[in-house]
Image (cartoon, rainbow, N blue to C red; front, side, top):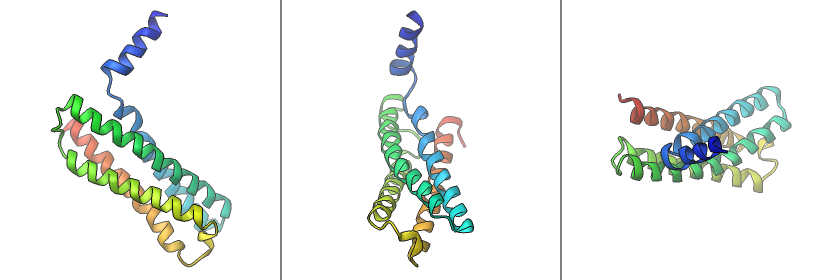
Length: 145
């Protein structure tokens, strides 16, 4: 029982939440990019559905990572973490892009079969790019330049 009490104390009082959640948007946008490219190559509607599911989950995980990032910036770095404003703006852009892309795709199930799929695929790839930039900026906070 003592182990679980120590674990709970560490998770809630010692270790910041943001590093535990930040990997989800990176992995989910990366998986969406991977599956949408496979869907294009193999002309597979099923793989496109997997990409869509990853984008929808990425938008949810971006909210969690963003909220905990702001909390950790205030609590751990007293609001002055390096590049904090840039990270907040990029995270907001990532949220808009992933949620917007997911919403458009949800409302237009056959989007992948339409000429507009170019924009759909581009939005997924750009989302992954933004996630990678955010990951780099997070590394700058932890490890310096």
